[in-house]
Amino acid sequence: MKRPNILWICTDQQRFDTLGCCGNPFVRTPNLDRLAQEGVLFDYAFCQNPVCTPSRASFLTGRYPRTTRCRQNGQSIPADEVLVTKLLRDAGYSCGLSGKLHLAPLHPDVCRGVEARIDDGYEDFHWSPHADPWQPANEYIQWLQAKGVTFERKERTDSRHVQTGMPAALHQTTWCAEKAIDFMTARAKSDRPWLFSVNIFNPHHPFDPPADLLDRYLADLDRIGLPNYVEGELDKKPVFQQIDHRGAYSIPDYFAPRDMTDRDHRLVRAAYWAMIDLIDLEVGRMLDALKKTGQLDSTMVVFMSDHGEMLGDHGIYMKGPHFYDPALRVPLIVAWPARVKGSRRSEALVELVDLAPTLLDAAGLERYPGMQGRSLWPLLAGEADLDTHRAEVYSECYNSQERSCEPKKAYATMVRTRRAKLVAFHGLEPGELYDLVKDPAETWNLWDDPVHLSLKAEMLKRLSDRMAETVDPLPKRTAVW
Image (cartoon, rainbow, N blue to C red):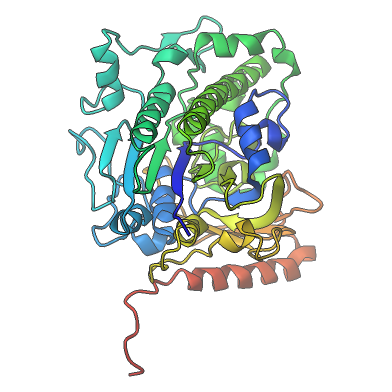
């Protein structure tokens, strides 16, 4: 079997319900909808941590955050961790990246050049962790400077929560795609397979789409629904949610729903979707480049995000130690015309930790013994039931963000089945328990409800079993004693 090229597109902070093919009637995502039609759309894909660095370390290694020891933003992934991109490089792949890596601290007190890297396998490395100019090594900013352009965001007169960003032609999303197109085009005639990671910063806040992409939403702004929030629902939920309700990231008055009008909420959603509209345009350009260079059938395309965005749901913006579906459930599309039958939709529960072994299987390579994910390849190749993979999904947060104004650091773990979700905040009460059949919106916390004690016990047993599975399989046993 000829090994596939791999175009791996990962956005930042994009929740599951942001594509037309996922039921969103407002966004314009014809290219991603077409990709889903040509491949497999996984409706229930979940990240293993709701924050950037631990999530990325997890899906790039196929290991859980506590196993990688890269559990927090601001930590560096240990040098002995093995990324799937290194394994592919060692097997003969040419690997490249544009945009964000974020496996090490990005704070300017620590990161004064390109972020610290382990042997990650990327030979063609174009680093831009965000769109801001405060890191001189940001290659996107260098690209703008070469064009004689200064990066800027403009404040809007109609909202302090949304800004106007760079025009599409000069956007970081566009730059990321351009680097990918250059890479793919240069290797069109090569016998060596390639992998390229397109790690776009959007739709991460600040909410700053190009003006023209946001403008099309303004005429129908009143049609956009308000966040999923019931007044008083946080009273019986973990203290971290109550704090973030008063201000995102526990910063008082920063995206505090109590200070936002209905129009504010709708405008933020519109801006978030407009950023995704731009992503779709650039995905279309990359797919067109594959077709133009004759590489479409021989390329496996993966589209995903590292984690979600609360977007005002449950009275919270952005992210934190929150395990609602909007924070954990992400889009996941896999297409490969030569080997993966398209026009299929999977309802299987899958985890992003499953991607690394999937890529190795697709390339016909042996699984690295430290990996903990379960390959999706049997589902993609038609060798297993498309709707059956895991009985539950698992996620964790071990003080993943440096946060203030809190009584104790957030150490929490979650398990979710099709029927229920349980979140344990270790050392704190209460936790969370939701009946997803009766309450799919995750509004009513049943943690202290005596009627649901048996469900709580069942889910706690599942959680303890999954936590045990995160024990590092390395080093390998080499003898019976």
